Image (tube, rainbow, N blue to C red; front, side):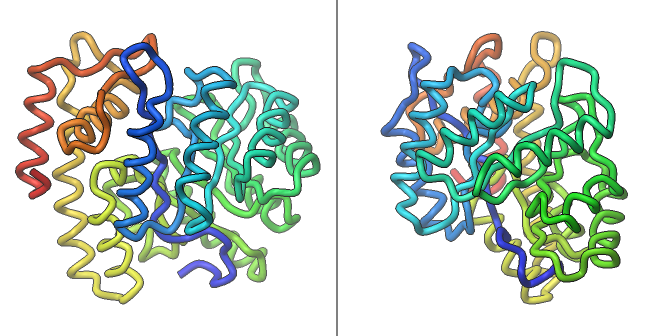
Length: 312
């Protein structure tokens, strides 16, 4: 496994942000959602990430959601706050707000919209880290920001104490494994958290040395991911594979939306919220514009997968 000094490890669900039908934060649903995660034994909460629709929310909505999450966790697990903005100063502004609201750590991506190279990306992470007292994790999600964080850059940032970890949603499991080896070889004493966001290969990434996982599907089945993590930690790889296989089948809910009218975030966030509504955790499967909620027929397909997974 990765360095035992990793500050953030285990199952850290990227919590969705429940909305009411008017588009406001559904506080009661968000509180219930966080409580179900804590009851399942998760090891942290990642607020305001991609699953949390952060780029669609106003600053006021972000502050309210983060405030509710931090209050509900009540210090039982660390809360990692997404500070996802296109430019460095905007990220720093969100970092200041996250610190004020009581977050335990921050996550940010490479800059986006404007075209940047590795030098600008490195300056971005160094500037954010210098501007806050909170630990900073790098969020590698090239599909959304058009920049793949290289193994060399991330290793440099880890060795220099700039970042405390990586949340890898690149889908590039080869690069993730190379990063684990590179940090082990070049910064063996670093307090480094290597978190995979790849829901269906958590067992493989844990075997390779990951610290834990940030799986969006854990919103729906946190108990399953905690069981999976515990099996990996115990070295019971047969049990881990069995649980991972069940979760991989459950992940088929992201295919419930009609591909002719839906793509991207609606498929994932829409499916997770619909599943949570069917499970009685949140009141509505409303999503932010321009996304759309899953309709009755699509919700029926989600229900089928929940039943097959033993959740309904």
